[in-house]
Length: 173
Length: 173
Image 1 (cartoon, rainbow over the protein chains, first blue to last red):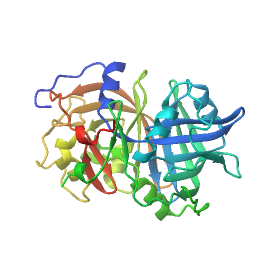
Image 2: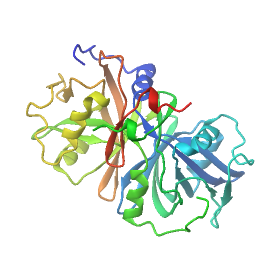
Image 3: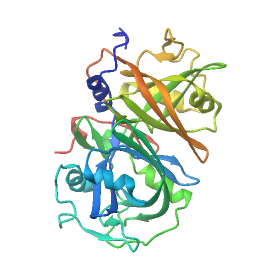
């Protein structure tokens, strides 16, 4: 910002431009809704506290999947790697049949859908729901963690409406 | 997760391992505290809503910088690119002299420190503070946005305690 452009009004477009420049990891959130399993792709999951283990995320509550998810008592947060790009895209696509067979999953004994290819799956109980405009910020306590068997997870990043894979070449010195 | 390891107890170490595998964009948060400017590097900033423009983040409140930041009325969220790796490291280093001259900054008319090399700077008012363990989740409304003049920002990503740069080579098809 060598020549500041001055304080602009925070238009929705400028705000979106700013966050298109802000990379994010990718997660798929699933829950057992009143009408069956629901799930969606989220780029807002972050760690809040390790002791107690708590994470946070936000979702727009416009979709029926999101509305069911934020009302659930418990959910599963799947942290995805680059090998799960297809899962990320399926759960981000509007109107897709997400549990119809395109992705391997099974219900946990407690009912939530577990995506069996996810490298990390964190079963959580929602602690707090904070409505903001048409979105909801949620904090969730982690009840249990399942780790996949693949020790060599290629990290998946969402940026400017595209997906990237981190590796040795992207590493900064 | 072809051979599930079963539900493990959510130990702090396993939780940290999971989030080490979850990439994140990098921001520096600054505010004018009661004893001068404060700032810290955060990997938890995400967009919540574009209309109204609201973002969220969380910080551990153990440090004096974080304690001053979460008590501020307004703050500036700087979204960083790979060219600002030095700034990210400076504001993440314990005990560093962050406003002593190593980084270009000036106070905004409203008092908060603006880091002049940041590609995006969002001045925000804190709307909600949600304490969770030794951390705080915050939601903040964006009051104004300054965009730097560099149109070619190389995205900066934090992953597994290292920094990465996204470019054409990291792009997935």
